[in-house]
Length: 405
Image (cartoon, rainbow, N blue to C red; front, side, top):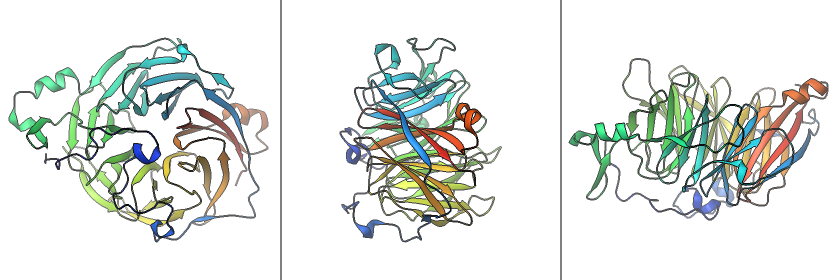
């Protein structure tokens, strides 16, 4: 365990718009400057063999009174978290929904930055430095629920209270135990088997928690030189973190090892990395940044090394979120749009659609195959549902039909 630099850059950070609620590089360079783009080849192309795909906004979910920061799907429901600490529950069916108090199923007083679901438990990351665990009552939609745990747990805190070796210095003359995050918890990720949950924070650390008893098993201090904005876990032994220091780091922990070790540092972005997503097989990593690009990284070996294959370009402002479903990559941007990409033959990608309708930056995305529509009209192509949350306080549901390759 090392010591955090002093002072932390964002301890009392407010979030009025995309440029403030994300940590970005401090160089002062303009995001709109062409020189800010990474010097890697563009992978996106417009293929004449691919028709314009059928897409439409099939519903707009209204009800949040503050920014929508996070989305997650579970069973028949969509959960959304907002900047005023409310977590709402909606039917995932694509129909216009006007929210009311009954949609608020969980509530606290701190912005909800990230959501993940494991079985009947929903984990939420917050701006007040905490992770909360909520019990989802099966078969009882819109029932108000209570928080069943707050991480770090009381037991975690107490057992480390009396030994000096459990403390780290977070700023001059101030210490806390290593199980605490000391700034906004910005992102969460689950291990493939659901045994562990990873949390990333603007305090430049990421932590590993056991989901069975919520115990903090590891804290990687000074993982980056600036705030960590994104974290993803692959189906093997790798964890990826993206930071405002413009870097992506690859971490590995083999079975039997006590700690994660750094195996690669990916440096191509010209500004803060805001979002990460992995292909279903874990062989391709997508990273989105304030430089308006989505860089595509491919794994070259079993030791975690990644190489750049190119960049997806088309957004006119910062990339704020990414989601992968099947062979599609969905990107949300501060330019208020969502773009849908698909890898074609070779290494080229096509932008299949630009989804327009939000009035403010798109902050979060999730997507799924639309199995109901596929059963009705499979000849058209493969249908998907894409859910986007925005700083305009709305969640939009998009249906897209992707032609078969």
